Image 1 (cartoon, rainbow, N blue to C red):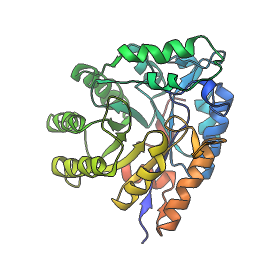
Image 2 (image 1 turned 135 degrees about the vertical axis):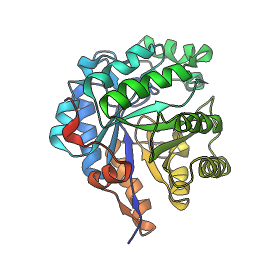
Image 3 (image 1 turned 90 degrees about the vertical axis):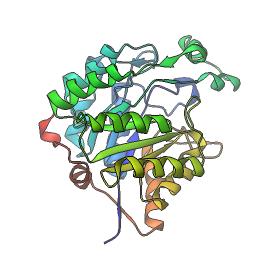
Length: 309
């Protein structure tokens, strides 16, 4: 049988700002519409953040999440994956609030604290739509994304143990894999682990195939056959590292959270266009796109009927 590939689509995130692309979804309606279209294009998992509808700034407000989560669930069968990373300046309590209310099948969970530099995006001249945008980017020069062992334990307990949520373990560097192994040794996480190798963020491991291969070798050593992996290549590295992931036996993540472009110099019109481009890669390698039902089976998720929205 052809190998099945899970496509994750990260719809809006908290990295890019509205001035960078008119196609970045901001309002609940825009997030819902683009998520549903991405699902219909083939995304088995939808990774979701929320934004303030009036300014486009990242928000942890559960009330905003609840304006689009039920609609997405009603109009597609994709697995809904809610961020616990939130956005810069949010407390751990804020970052977990929406997931604790929604009790989704899956949440993202960063496996350590890192510098997270967005300020180089200030180097490109642009007309800012909102005053907060350049301030937000500049503030990242002195920002550490905090996810201590205690923070991770809190998410695993409140979401995993208490609500049956499983995780997309986001690993921005090799040490994060060892952090995950620590929690596996303690019995706080259970296989199959779903690891997202994140490459190309300023503060994390660089975006090249050698680093990806090293991450995979390390994960093989630590987890054996108890894990599955996907690859997030930031910005222009999205598609090349997607291809590399497929060649190494992995799954792929696309979406406007990670990359605003479809081709060099060409803004992606929406998230679905990136999903369709990923499908071309998968089809070209004689693989198949995993359905949401198959993703649930592979990752041992609780099912869409067990969420609270």
